[in-house]
Length: 123
Image (cartoon, helix red, strand yellow):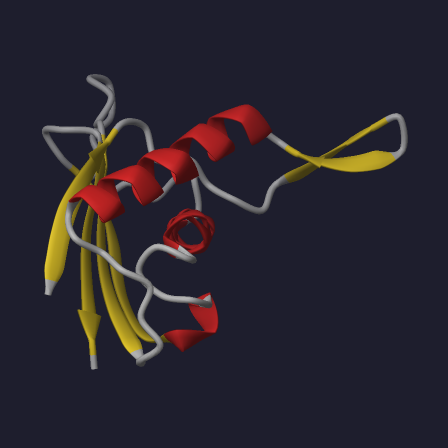
């Protein structure tokens, strides 16, 4: 198993805004930087494009605002959109195509350090 942490505010993928009638990803610059960080740190951790089935573990650490009482981050960004951004960032790094991912374990929690802990394992 390869594990690494990507520090920074997790960026979701999938939200579109329309500008001049054309769909554009909201926060496209931040998303591109986030995916590039995931790819760079994945390579540094020893990832190489596999052709085997892959299992992924993701722990998204969100910062808890001081005025919030809830125990879990039940507000945006959506977990599925956070997952999609990570999977796309790992394409060509940990696997050739994200269709090879056959198991995903993902949680969104309040943590001390903003970012995502990624675990990748060939099955």
